Image 1 (cartoon, helix red, strand yellow):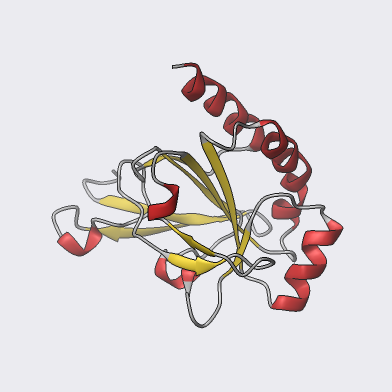
Image 2: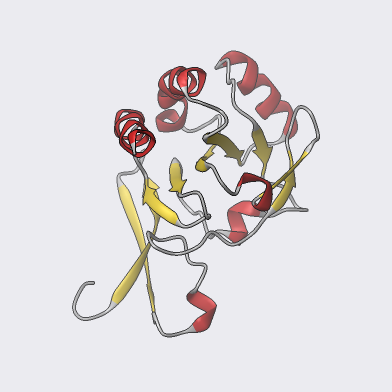
Length: 172
């Protein structure tokens, strides 16, 4: 809250060092799915980029879910990939799911998956699923961590913070 008004964090453009905020009325029912801690993630269905298998938010219920909105042209995004890959290799996939949602075209994404040796499933935000638009992601990297019911637990964690948070959650 700032000056008596609530704001939604639309993300950080690390390259230009800009934080984008959007004011909202918390009593407005259209805001129930705003990407902010405590809200439910609006349900989605999309195809995993390489396998073309369907991924739905419902299929992820019961797991903690880390979603990384990113792009191959984003220096901050690609800088975190080695550590995210390392965390993904170590996690219990029965309890935690990782998903990347990329803004890239198919050629750039395929090249990026290979170049950065990305191990976790990727979805391309495209003209069909419009995931960047749906979730109003305007800056990358943007990430969210969901609880087992699909509620947003945390946002924009560094890989180190994510690793610590997952250790804390999985101990209990």
